[in-house]
Image 1 (cartoon, rainbow, N blue to C red):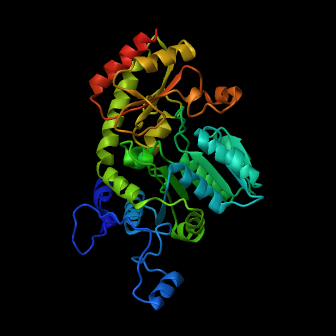
Image 2 (cartoon, helix red, strand yellow; image 1 turned 60 degrees about the horizontal axis):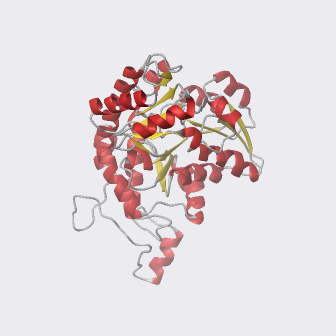
Length: 394
């Protein structure tokens, strides 16, 4: 029945497991372990646990399993594993499938922590990593060979909102026998169709739009059942990166309103970006839903909408951008995104501050760049606040 439901219905009902009490809101199973009736039952469960049998919270939990099943249904994935954070999901997805001597091709426009995992951790253990311009299909064709094991990219990059062609890159990768791992957090599950477009593994920071209210860290990795249970699960359960039951419950509650929030945020993001186009105080406005975005046609085909994020570059560099951030009255300064509150971030000094200046320049992360994650505030109030903050920055 679940397969016949539309996404908003799946986000509310898929994967529900009710106890004998028939609760309306999903139950939180706050337990680290589980009891067996006999020693024989314990031995049998450790040999092969059934779908409704659990051993230890690090291995699985009924509340966490509800969350995994719900997101899997929403994404059209065979299975998934919920992680303690978005970066636990990213690092777990990559570390579980790679070994010394393997080769990775990745887009260069990535979140700072993703870059750290690829540049510093994987290479430390003998994995060869090549970075390219992810928006250039010719570079993918040149970099991916029969020796490539994994391809990794953010479907929409952080913070400059470049959009990568999932279908075309996946076709290039699969023709060479490589797995495709996509960090899909900016695209959101609302506008995502990454599996249908060719991705093998999809990763989300559920901290963002899924929780969407600044409450708890979480992540999830989705893929085939063979990959999730045969490759990822052994790595995650033995290294301790699993999600807590309470976080899973919070995220289940977040899923119920995610579609409504994300669509409202996207409408406001488009209105704000349109209003800011051509503003004399701005060097540029970056929003995937605008016709002047370099990948606007791809955005329309791959996502349908421009999403909840935009970025602006203020004339006057760091001084102007700091004045802008400090002058905002509704939008808050933080480094999170996908929240019910509008969040302003200065990537050059926060999320991407560790990058060398030449790498920042290559990625378009200037001192004047501000990333804006749109919340669910009244659109007119928010637009007025952003405009007055830009005026104050002059």
